[in-house]
Image 1 (cartoon, rainbow, N blue to C red):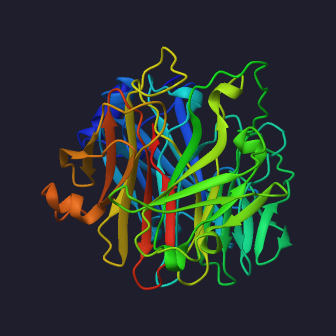
Image 2: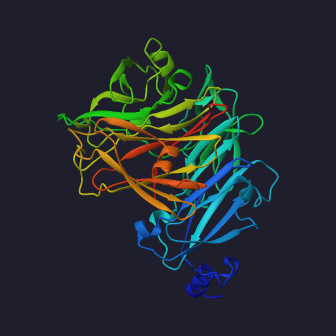
Image 3: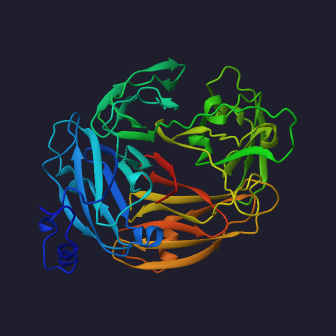
Length: 473
């Protein structure tokens, strides 16, 4: 066997003269490798080949897909296919279930890309997954890199707010472990650290007793303890923003952790807005013992909540008080009408025009989210244009929609400064003339503003929500 992949064979497969299974791959062939949790019968994977635009690789690549269970790193059932430049591919539950070689319901889905010149930061290929238990649950997540995770190490544990009555699992490339958390009222405040034999973050999955998913998220080593400046210099308030989904039945619960904020705030101010940017309510909470939770349904119990679209959080501090910028992340749990829910962290949008701590770095934005034509699901996207000093000159975003049937459309839509703009996924598809597509990626683009955004998928029957942030490749 040659040391690297044969480009001639790769292109023969691309043009239909050879099966993808017959492409020779040498032991020195460069590769990318990422994974997401697998839940039998509920896992959808949508992958987008962004390598041409982001890494100047126009060639097709060999894509390998497999599913592993507890203690299984490699599976004898591997799906090989050619993955063309700019292609979108959707692997549905029946396709992924057919690759399973174990008895359990939980594991991990792996995608590996091979090509003689393929390379990304940390050898990761970012893709998306959403999970759907029809009439019961939804969840969504982006992949994590799997390279280098075979070395011994320890996990970071999870910062999360979890519904009581759910079963929680830690999932990494080769392990599935049930997690027991400390009960705090009707919420599980934080899972204990898990002794993973792998380095790097893992995923966590919440299910009911029938293994129907309700939440998926990943833990992180992004913790911070800020040093205060001897002489503070006012720069701008520390803020974050997050969307609101059906507030009367799905008011988020906020997990407040000084390690993810950078300091322990004495109080948090939550300013609720409608879709037009008008302030509906302004509430302040003193977190008390931290880490801890703030239930926004209780905080806004006397407010007009039916029109809430997003909430801006002010941490009562200024970036100029500290030596380095504050992360200021809040973990958010979004219950649905049936009581379970998914979670995501808060965001801000930096731009060249407004970043108070601007460095000589690009603010180019290329981030994407999934969409599918499944009539049982509703897709919505929330684009944030909040954060920084002064007004942002960029008040629109370019949507690039690429479908699984190789169509592509670009449309510019307004995202006013100091607002969060909501967009309906099916309306975007229709407005772009892409009816008939089975699935797609929705990519937001800008040159001088690194927009942050959220995607939401909801089960129309149960009202369950899955949520995650847009991600780049």
